Structures are given as structure tokens and as C-alpha cells.
Figure 1 (spheres, rainbow, N blue to C red):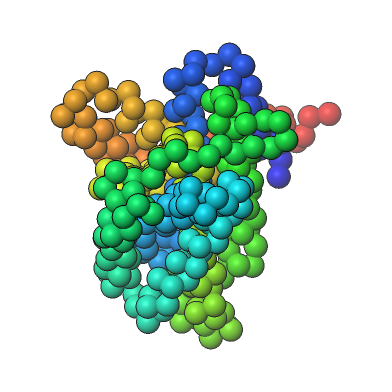
Figure 2 (figure 1 turned 120 degrees about the horizontal axis):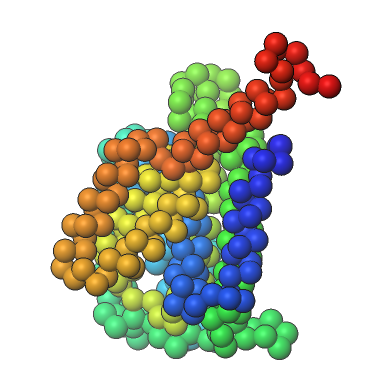
Amino acid sequence: MKMYKIAPIMIFVSLLAMYPLVGDPYFTHLIILSLIWSVVASAWNLIMGYAGIHSFAQIAFFSIGAYTSGMLEIHVKVDPWIGLLLGGLFTAISGLIIAFPCLRLRGLYIVLVTVAFHQVIPVFIKLGGEWTGADVGLMGMPHYHLGGVSFGGSRVSYYYLTLLLFLFMQLAIYVIIRSKIGLAFVALRDAEGFAESLGVNRTKYNFIVFGISAFVTGTMGAIYAHYLKVATPRLLELETFSETLMMVVLGGLGKFPGTVISAFVVTFVNEFLRTAGLIRPIIFGSIIILVIIIFPEGLSRVIESGIDRFERFSNSSERSPMGSRRT
């Protein structure tokens, strides 16, 4: 990859790494939330954009990861790092379970199954009593510790923990997209019958994409719950669901890394509009609709167009007016 193509990513990561040194704590908080939700949106984009499976269970996976890690650490006294891993693994198992009935379904029917799964989770939370905190939720989750550093002791330490996890998860998703597994996802999405005739096993790759997407999302759910020190049924409300879906659509379905930018845009714009009170959803929704109308293929396409134009400009500047290269 040419340097000018990765330069924006390098600059973006460098700015994120240096921000807490000069940044305001309030904006640091917003960036932490943006980093978390960008990974969740990228995992959702993996299953819906690349694999073409219309799964609406992502926020349910997010809540499962948050509650699983919290319950293990509060009630079973599991180490927070182990709780983080187990939260992701249990969510991955949940993803494989929900993938099973989706194997024989297509389109709208998968939407209905995954939406039903989303609706069932709050019921289990309320029936969980003291284990889940019922309507109140889980509170008082222990801090992550590494050596002598407590990641709950300051917002800056948590910022760097979230940043490292963000980089690792986004890199893992990118590697998957560029691998044979990612090519299989796209092949089944665009030409399922032809892909299966070439030996691409739909069942196998459906389980893989559900498992990966659920694991990533559940892990970020655990990080989110520990950062805010609480996991409540409010995570499963329509507002959270719709905002995350906006990040995926605005970023560009089947595009990378548009969801990273869209997560920051949606998180910051939504936060700044909180002073608007009851009309906030109207203003926020109108802005998103306007942006989608202007950029129907998402922000990823805008980035790609900018890079392509810069590449054409660079190539043309290397040539003389007569068409020969400069010496």
C-alpha cells in the first residue's frame, strides 16, 4: 500500500494517542465511547455489509458481553481480565446458537429471528434477580489491573486501554476482510449459488461470521460496562440500537474503515445535541438522513474518492505536458 493511502490512518492514530496529553476530560470520555462503538459498528458491518446477513442481534450481543463479564466478576469473583475474555467467548457461543436457526432462512426472516432474540434478552435480565440486577442493573464492577496500573483509576489510563483494544480489533477485522474467509463472505453475499457450486460452504461461513462478530461485540460490551461501572437494560433500548445502525449505514455497508469515522460523527453530534431536549432525536435524525442523501454510499466512498483523486493528481503531476515523464 502506498504511503499516501495509509498516511491519514497513521495521522488519525497518532492524534488519538497524543490527545489525552492536551485534551479535555469531557472530550476524552467521548473519544473512549467513540472507540468502543466504532468496533461494535465494524463487527456489525462484517456480518451485514460483507457477509450480507441481515442480523439485528448486535446490541443483544453487546449486552450479553457486558452482563456476563459483570456477573462473573461480581458474583463469582473472577479476575476482570478473565471475565473480559469469558464475556466475549460466551457471547460468541450465543452468536453460534442464533446462527443455527438462520441457516435455513433468508432476508426478512433472519431479521425477524434476530429482532426476537434482541427482545428476549431484557426478559432474561429482569428474571435474573440479584445476578443481573433486574431493572436496576449491575453496578460496582472491579477495575482492570496490569502490574501496578489500575485502568479504572483515571480516565487517561482507560483511554489507552480502549485505544489498544480498538487498534487490535480493527486490525483483526481488516485481516479477516482481506483473507480467504472475507472473500468467502462476499462471494456468498453476491452470488450464493455460484459460490456454493465452487465449494464455499455456506453453513461453515455463517457460523464463522456470527461467532466472530458476536465475540468482538461481546468483548466491547464488557469494556463498556467496566468503563461506566454499570450494565443496565437501557443498553437494549431503541435509541442505542438505532444510533449503532446509523454508524454502520453512514460508514458504508461492506466498506472499511468508514464505520470508524461514522462512529465518531454519530457519538459527538448526538452528544452535542443533548441540550436540544425533546427535539434532539428529530434534529439528529434529520442530519443523518441529509448526510446519507448526500453520500448514499457512506463515508467510506468519500474517503476512497478523495484518495483516487489524489492518486490521479500525483500521477499527472509526474508527467510533462507532452506526455513524457520528467527527468
